[in-house]
Amino acid sequence: MTTQGETEPERGGAHTYRGTVTWEYAPDMDGDPDPGEIVWTWVSYEEDARIGKDRPIAILGRAEDHRLVGLMLSSRDHSGDRDWLAIGAGPWDSEGRSSWLRRDRLLAVPAASVRREGAVLPRATYDAVIAAIGVPPVAAPNRTGWTLRDGFRRILGRPLPRSSSDGTLGP
Picture 1 (cartoon, one colour):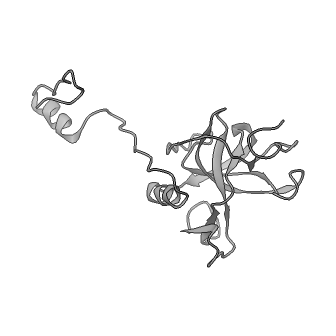
Picture 2 (cartoon, rainbow, N blue to C red):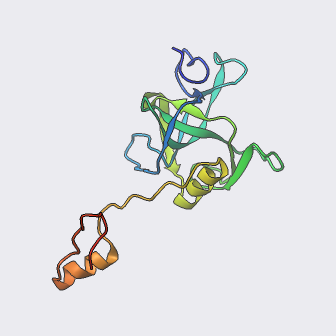
Picture 3 (spheres, helix red, strand yellow):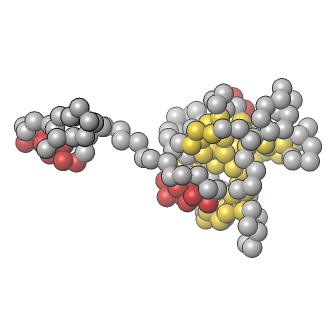
């Protein structure tokens, strides 16, 4: 199957991707891979998509067809190489080694090809990676739809502000 990027490897796994990405941070260590997580999958080599190796990937968003999109990690020191970004150590590496993200090769992988979830990429690290690859910041989701002020109003039994016709909130 040919997708945007190189031909998808016959054995599945991650491969180069050049399409549209919806950037999002939504980690949920529930057994399914999500943006904002480090996962393990087979990654094809650039030189020959028929061969590759199992490696960690930082999932940063989704492709239009809902495949996961991310960047591969390495524990090898890439100091001085502008195509790699140091992200430090984290629970995704059992030996506690510092990790580097390759930022010049975006990868797409079907969720079914992910071998396992590894860890959550901290939000600050995710934001730094997104900035380093030149993507506008991803807004943090407002999970409740309330502001702190709204919460206090509810506790005190005061009415919540109403939306006006121009979309702004009242007092």
